[in-house]
Figure 1 (cartoon, rainbow, N blue to C red):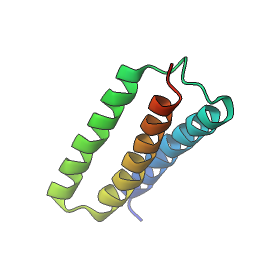
Figure 2: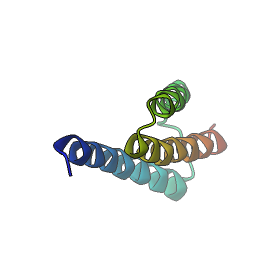
Figure 3: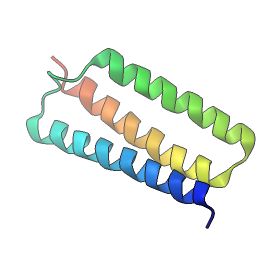
Figure 4: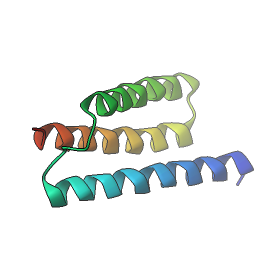
Length: 85
């Protein structure tokens, strides 16, 4: 495996862990009081824009990792807005 692919997998893995912890916290507290709605929306828009680029370059590892990341961000956004004030 090339260094770039290992670094990509590690980077995505760290993003996944962070988002999973945040999703678990939202589910546990059932409150998004300390979550910025604007920040969540911007993160979701950015994830979708990155995904569009990944599809345009036809890079399978980027597409797969990006789809998982975009899905986790979407779940996080839905929960944050659901448990909003």
